[in-house]
Length: 449
Image (cartoon, rainbow, N blue to C red):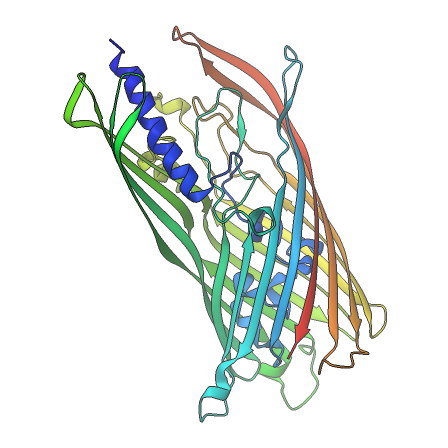
């Protein structure tokens, strides 16, 4: 007779395999998304997101929806983002040290328009959306939640569908407000089957549902000169500030299965349930300021990301739940502050260059995380980019804009203890040093209308 434990694993494998086929899950997902890990559009990648609250492209739908009011024209943008990574965990007693080298590859599309023309009121109301799809549009949901014997990185890898929808309007003398929603999916699957001891199934029944979840993003922009001295020059001219708030969000999958094993487990069968989250983004509060001169601007931002709640959220995750782990060894997270600084300069009316730098501390507090074995590092982020505007269009009403952005992320060295357990229950601790290098290239074409 096959042991019940072995049957449990086989039944669970059937359920997970069915759901994986349906959603085309990846083996390299992460607790992140392109908006916070890299940057949505090339202008965000190139400035390390330091000026993202004040940009006039549709990516502000994620960073600060109030900035949709910066350009009265409509916009259609398409682009790609490619990230190459080499994440290492060096162990003196092992030959290989590369933990992850899977690239992230996105197709990007965004659009903005003024819906104010639909009303009888002469007041603009802007609507924008932005979407990013992995593997150049072939993978809608990259998802992998697992324990690890060799270690896994917290925030880098393939990303699930990135989708944001929002709107904005000016309200008074240089003050604009906006709201948007990050759209994530909560997937549920139910599998019922009859199986022989050899693993052959019959009378299978699989039901899958994916429910969208809307997570709020709020933003406001203030042109200080227009607000406090609209009719005269003052020292506030050229200064702008912005505030944003993003609620926490994540993608989740729940699998319920009931397997009847012929002559071994009768009806109602062996019940298995797995609930897990991925692409977690913490509650985030951001403040930014910039000064805009004649053909140049400089600015920065600071974000507070409240990761500490993730420790409690993991308690409801059947894969990442560490309820059997001693309290002193359970995974813990800290709230962090991320400073960013960037600048942009117009070479002439057709070309502009930009750059930015940021430093991001790791939210992962514990360095020994049994079963999950998460690793994460402090990051130094540097970006560079260029824009070109082609204004000799014969058919189009407005110039065409081309953007290129490059970003380098250096993961600082950090020591971790990887905990593994063999089939006899023997626990082994291995000290490793984690670090890595990430290169991101992004390009886009923008049409105005």
